[in-house]
Length: 290
Image (tube, rainbow, N blue to C red; front, side, top):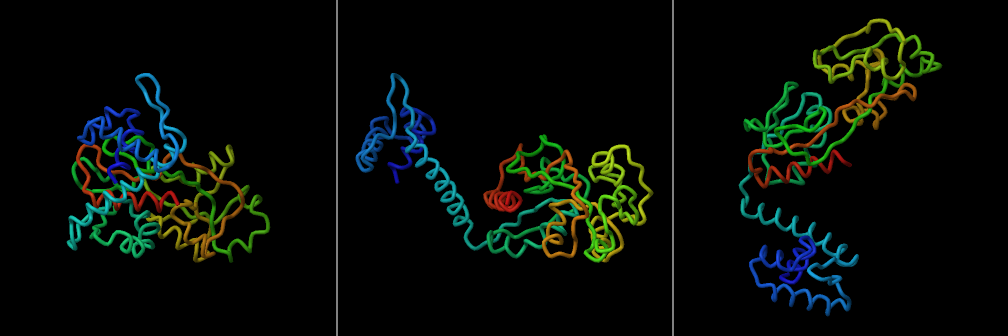
């Protein structure tokens, strides 16, 4: 293990001197460890130059795997220090993201991060990380964000969606969109949500549309109305992916719009993150990416 630590640090710093300083050992000790590994593997791991060393491709592949393994070991040790005591972690999200994306994943999340006791803070106004309102935030908007450091970002796509029964009544989706009716709209003041006018301005510029037939102030109600066959809604891909997968909603035509913002998993920028909060954020980032 000491030799592998020395190898990873040397490759990362491109320096035996800096690796020795980080590990708190002598340069000679680091060099001996690397020499022993090279003997074990039967090949050189560095190209030695005057005042510099460069990792070989084999070394880079090996140390990339080591870095991931050391990170995982570090997280496991942090979790072991906590013992069986669950750590309360507050996740901040919007109401729609909480209900439509996070809730269906809570069982899997609790199995993956059992040491976290989750407190969910869901609201549509901004949830701040600086003030300590939340330990982890999933925020939609245009980065960068001054109060958080991003782990992952995911773009979305907005498409017309409706129930299969409603879609069956439409012979030509393109003709329907040229003269749309029975539109369902999310009637909110936050303009990060696209109205039908916003969507048509990008998807079919210059087209006039009739006012929406139904207005709701909650996006969950918008999707429920569409699933019930009440009309056509704007489907945000990340939020309605479950309904598209189970067939209770279908896309109406090929037109789509990509909004400017992204879903971003954020940890606090100006205060140290709890180790369990980091595990929570990494799990959310992996799920959102996947």
